[in-house]
Structures are given as C-alpha cells and as structure tokens.
Image (cartoon, rainbow, N blue to C red; front, side, top):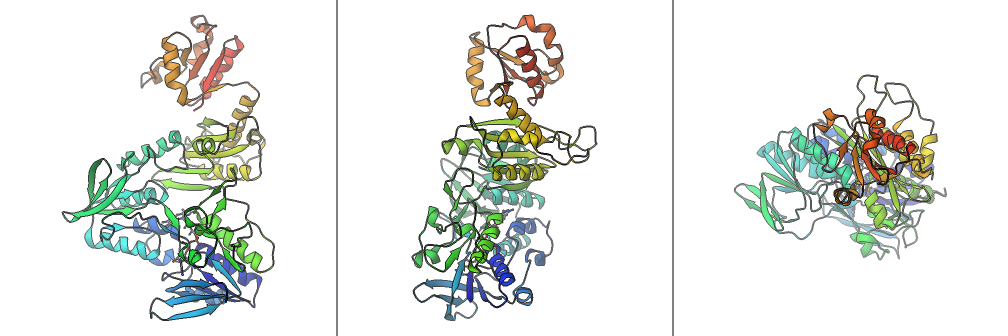
Length: 541
Ligand code: FAD
C-alpha cells in the first residue's frame, strides 16, 4: 500500500507516524510546502518573544529524523498542486527546482491546514505587515524586529494569535495595540469573562481598540498606518494581520471534493472525503460540534492530531471514528490563564439552547495554604435537562486542570449537577476538599432543588428602575469597608453578619435582589432571607 500525505505538520505527521506503527510495509510519502515538518505552530509566538530561544526547539522532527525512526519519505519544499482521483495520482512541484511530477497513491490524506484570513485590503504588500502561520513567517517577523528595532505594533485581530503576540511583543518592550471589530476579545468567552482578559492586557499596557474594523494598510513616515472604518488610522512600526484562519483547500476544490463552511473539506466520522480513498483532517475540515451537533470549524491542534490518527487507523483497517470537537482551549495572557470548553452562553443561545449558568470565584487551593489564588469559573448548562454545555475559567493557577475536568465531564455526558459527585484529588497545596468543580456542582444542584434563585447582570438596569419605583429591594451584603471602594447605585447595604438584626428594614412584600463580592455571602444572605419568608434572588457572578 502506498499512502501519500499532503502537509507534514500536526495532522499529516501524526497520520504518517501512526500508519508506520500499524503497517511496517506501507510506502509513505509526505509532501510539505514549507521547509519544515512537524513544527510547533503553537510555540511560534514564544520564539518571537525570546521565551523559546533556540530555533531548533520549534522543529520537533526533521525529515532525516522522521525517516530514521519511521521510514517515511518527507519531501519538504514540495507543493502538491493538483489531485487526479480518476487515476489516483497527485501533481507535485519541487519548489527548489521548479520540477513537476506525478506521484501515484493508493490512499491519499489531506492535512493542508488553514491560512491566515486575508481580505482584499489595500496595502497588503507592505513589508511592515505580517501574518503568522509557519516557521518561515516567524523568522520573517523575528528578522524584521532584529533589523529595524520597531518600537510599536498594531495587531489586527483579538483572538489566540493576536493575544499571544501581544504578550510576546510587549516582552520585547514594544508598544502594542490590538484592534478588534467586536466589543470584546476572544470570542470563546462571554463578555463578562472576557472582561478579565481585557483588564490583564490593559494592566500590561496593551492598548485595546475595540469595536474598530481594520480596512487596510498604508506605509507612512517609515512605519505603517492601520486604516480603520469610521476612525483615524493607528500608526505603528509594524502590523500583524491575525483576524482568523480560512481552510487551505484550493487543492480539494480543484479535485471536486465536496466542500462545506468557508470552503472546508467535508468528511464523515472516519475522516473520509466525498471521493474514495481520499481522507482529510485538521484545520481544513468541517467538524460537528460535540455540544450543539452543528457543523463548524474548530482549527486547533488537538482535533488535528486526533483526526490524523483516525484517518491512519481506517486506512490500516482499524475502524475508528471522530466524535466531534468541543473547542477546548487554553491561553496564557501575561500572568493569567484563560480556558474554555464547549459553548459559551452567547453561542448556546444563538444555537437555540435554553442556557443558564453559574459563576463562582473559588481559590485555586485551600485558603490556609500559602499561595492560593482566586479563579473565576463560569459553567453553562441547559435549563430543564441540566446538560452541561460549556465552561470558561480565568485565573492564575489550576485553571488548566479544572477546564480539563469540565471538558471530560461534558464529553462523558454528565449532568451539571453531577459535578458535585466527582471524586477529585485533594491536598492543601493543590485544591480544596470541595474542589472548584465540585462547588459549581453544588451551586447548580441548589438551583435545581429550588434552594437558590439567581438574577443576572443583564437584569441590572431593569432592577434599578424597579428599585427606584419601590417595586423591589436591592441589597448589597458586603462590609462597609468594601462598600467604600465602590458600590452599585440603588443597592442598600446591610453586611451579611448583621442581616438577621436588620430584617425589619426590609419589606417582606417585595422581592430582594442580593449581591456581594463573589456570590458566596449573597447566597448565605438569600438562605437567611428565605428562612424568614422573603423572596430572595442571588446574583450570578
Ligand atoms: P498544519 O499544522 O498547519 O499543517 C499543514 C501543512 O500543510 C502546512 O505546513 C502547509 O505548509 C502544508 N501544506 C498546505 N498545502 C499544501 C500543499 N498543497 N502541498 C504541500 N504542503 C501543503 N492550536 C492549539 O490547539 N493550541 C495552541 O496553543 C495553538 N497555537 C497556535 C499558534 C499559532 C501561531 C498558530 C499558527 C496555530 C496555533 N494553533 C494552536 C493551531 C494549530 O497549530 C493547528 O490547529 C494545527 O497545526 C492544524 O494542523 P493541520 O495538520 O491541519 O495543519
């Protein structure tokens, strides 16, 4: 059997290695357009910021090491320019020599990835404008910085690559502005959770130009103007376009493969395309969202690696299926970690799901053991069924482990209330006897049992108006010292510990909406009030 693979990085290299492990006799040829195979895309921003110092650390394998270990013929600087399914060949161009030839396959795997989304903006040819996808892109940025010592950069796009670059360019002492066409960065997060990311970036002097749409670029005064819709341009010494990625599927289109969203390749759960003996995986393919069941694109390394392995399994006769993508992701933003899995509240509602959520701010480990840090966790679940839909966490320590527990719970189909039952490892330096994930479960159980009723940020203005009209009571149960730092207009203050002594100040005929710092004391207050017959609602957050 001869297997030809297009793309020698996440999905392609994984597939090649897996096929070899399953079939010592197979002939395996990988064509890779760039000069590198199996490189660490995810590490590229950190090389720019000097966190990863040696360029060799970016390449996990070389064609030689791959051949030695796996006997896979890795042809770098070779671009596959056409697929001929009728005669089961591909046309390949050697980018060093310009020579073209046809290669026969029995099975073909496409893992060509995605390319930076590049609208037809003016000024794209500027040598002060960059995109970041490959090792070569990285070296180009690094060389520009070494040669020109830029003092400022504009990053068009507030997603993963924009944020990772912001941190790394600040690390080099540059003045950094992120331009984003939405009111928030990082759309896997709801706006309330993204606010923590905004605060962290601003505290490290990254400027955010939110609600601003990039329309083009123009060189001026030795630098580059980033042109904005309905606003003055932002001038900088360099700019990076990182507004998302588009599946790199011109090859598949040319061969008549069925395509989906943004030209992505349609595959079944065995990673088979619409054409026999052609498989595909990675950023180039359309996937089913594990939570919503909807068709979507989730260009992340985990899915790409798994899909490469699944294609290899099926080619080698092992029935193997892809179960869908949850979009689990994690990012370091200066001193914080932000992670998400499943869908957020915004996406859930857009998908027609009736979603509710809890927000909690537990410590990363037992409060009495030094070094514990607060994290903020939002768990989204379906009303009525209590199916877990997603989670977002922002904090300092232990964020990655909690998101992975929650991702596993979603995959396993646990009900949100079952989070309380998980038997999670505990010792004071690592967690609390009631882990943050358990705490989320307790809170959701309280909602299911009717022990707690919640109110939400989106209701605030309406409640303030009702408060002014005397229809509701708004109650803040923090201490006077905390209140001195700031308060929400319209809320009366009775500290939790003296609440029982001041019940006569509250009108039993009116519902009471309670708030504190993190939701814990307001919950206790709600239980006290309920015990005296009041109709109390706890703030979710
Ligand atoms: P790739 O790994 O991109 O490989 C595709 C390869 O195919 C490319 O090298 C390309 O040159 C080659 N190719 C394309 N067309 C042809 C052709 N016609 N002929 C020959 N070769 C061709 N994901 C995470 O989960 N976590 C992260 O922290 C993370 N960080 C990232 C940071 C950066 C800067 C980037 C760019 C990506 C990051 N990703 C991250 C995304 C992750 O790298 C991708 O999801 C993953 O690499 C996709 O794998 P793939 O095999 O589909 O494509």
